[in-house]
Length: 164
Image (cartoon, rainbow, N blue to C red; front, top):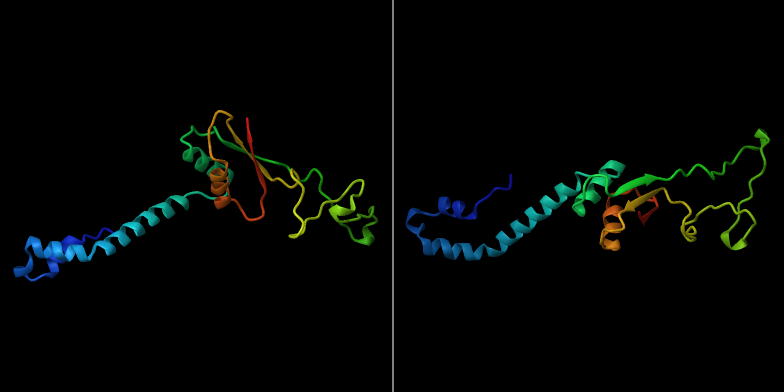
């Protein structure tokens, strides 16, 4: 689709008298910035095509991370954390269940019920939905790995990166 040759197009559009090497070279110098723009566009297109091959599914994200660090499949793996263990349910009064009292973290109740607002981040370790397990022998940039995971994960999902 984008296989376009400026040199061949110039040769086809010029009169036969002007199809000499020096005339073509002069016209090619005028097109340097356009050729660079085309090369940048093709590089961006190739990177975008590579990025959209993956999604937020566990196997797809694992494959992307393993390809990024040139590892065998399954070296970096993702474990889903069950978040229903400490779930708090609210009921209607007619259901005759024990009442649930909700408060701010600053109130420090004995058994706090955690509800999170945008202005109050949850404490560390609470609300993690998946863990990315990375080999301890792998040297990697933590911020780069977080950037790759954040590119593909669903909004609002929390995770942790841990060595094994």
